[in-house]
Image (tube, rainbow, N blue to C red):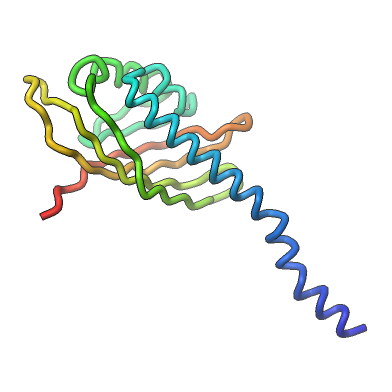
Length: 157
């Protein structure tokens, strides 16, 4: 009898992890799809689609520390850039790290690279590399960006 109880007690964590592992993988996949949607909207230079990956009450901060609050403001903020300095830009996301804070809240760090951007005078900007820090939330069955901080990383020497 003691042997059976011991085996059962030892098996409980395995059984619980086996039940939650597919769910965690599915949620992580949902967040990775959010990253893909973000990158796709950027590369289409579509401010409306770009803003659609943000929560209605999102906070956005760019590499210069300038921000926007709310989905509509994020769209309004990006529209001019998508038609000028970022019109031909191409964004690539890599090294995505996800940490779940709760079942409906996660921290996401994304390394990014950008080519094709130009300065205000039209001068090509060399390859840029940066880091996105997101807090994402699951709302109504989909993951959305709640808080985003963007930063440029210094070129490698």
